[in-house]
Length: 323
Image 1 (tube, helix red, strand yellow):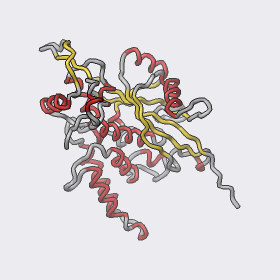
Image 2: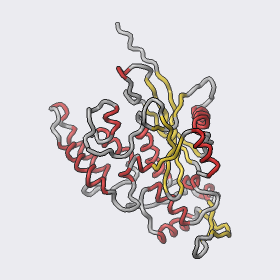
Image 3: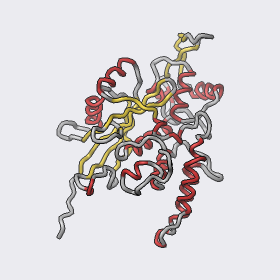
Image 4: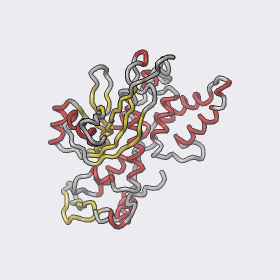
């Protein structure tokens, strides 16, 4: 009888998000064995740490010199092949992904530079998700033609039933026909692109020999880290609608313009200025500080998060509505 015993390791990944200058950033680290970047990652050591979150915080601080604030568990990623190795040997790595939010400031930047890690715009990894300046041209020019071809390609007889499923998934993910584009379906869109062989990770994982589109669709990441990043973005986009997590990314005092830019950065969509201000005022999420910020024109009023809202309502978020 063949011994099928396989060792399993538990790893911890952190999708650490910040917003600066109205642009969303995700923290990445380089991999010395490849040219790819990945999310901060480390093994869970139950001997040293009582909980996985404690272990992750220690790992991130050691790798990046960054002390995380808000953190929540995302999902467990355990698919075979997610850490592709020659001959598919070595321990099987099951990773627990986390979403972490932080604020950027010059003092922290110096520590990150010294640690050899840096921030990247998260839309450089998921460019089809940024609708702040309208529908991304890459969707209609590259993605949809390739995905439509994929849904219509010949399949083996035993897989023919997959054709309707592919078409349905495409409609839901990218909002075709009568379906609206749902900004929270970030993971579904990435997984379609991966399965169809349109992103570099499909080649790196050995699913096919060459990418099925001529130009890269975003920057590839180590292992399945771009999938984890997509999961984090989907979670955050949904979370801001019913929890005030956006204020974890804001300075203690901010203008409504800065708040709007941060919400737009996360949601990937442009929001009408007056509608956004009515939304914020109606939700009673902020209160004026009495201070102002010089802007070169009329001084802008400064606000802060009104923490009493956490005791007043069970779901104090920003209901952004449809696209």
